[in-house]
Image 1 (cartoon, rainbow, N blue to C red):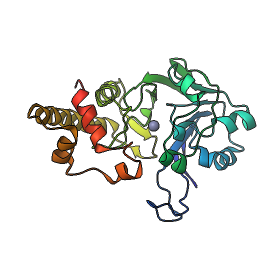
Image 2: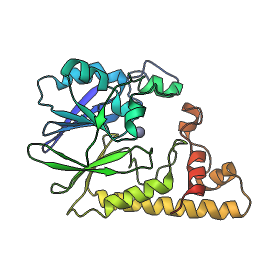
Image 3: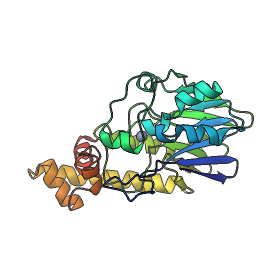
Length: 275
Ligand SMILES: [Zn+2]
């Protein structure tokens, strides 16, 4: 399923596979949305493999000159292969993302069911800046969610295409590869940008008008969480006991993802974090 929305000059494509009645999701509903954005001929992310054909059809007749993957995850590179095959589109990604996008993905069952398995694709190296006909985008390294992550910022417009760096003000569960300290530092980097406003166009399709406020709130939450977790660890509590103290219990997501996206991962990262 694809939903297309317009935000001024930015076209948003929200995509997701409809359930066929998997245990965790009523039939016909999208379990997890992912978003791509098209602005001035620049496509930012390409959705998930399950919606790749539908997405390429939705792009027919639109002027697209270049695509960028914010990071290597399957819900951001899913239509790369078809876009290269059918439109001959040039696609760029960060130095760290290139081998991951061109490699065989290591995925859990929930990832294959929800998003699909991406075809490995060869993509080019992202420069530090990208110019389209009317806009200039800075490529800002923003590791944390994963180490290869970048955001695209148009300073004059106050636009920030933030990929999966920001999901919510108070995230409750993360994957093992996520580094909370890096996430907080990357968010601070965006807060400190010299722009009048900062609107976040996120990888899940939420558009956050006051991006600075949202990022500051998330940084403060992560700092507080890290402090609390470290205090409880000093008292001799295990990671799972700290999780129960702070969050009450494990999230539903942990069950669906067989522990890949969990509150306990959040606690483990909080204990490691230098924030
Ligand atoms: Zn991601």
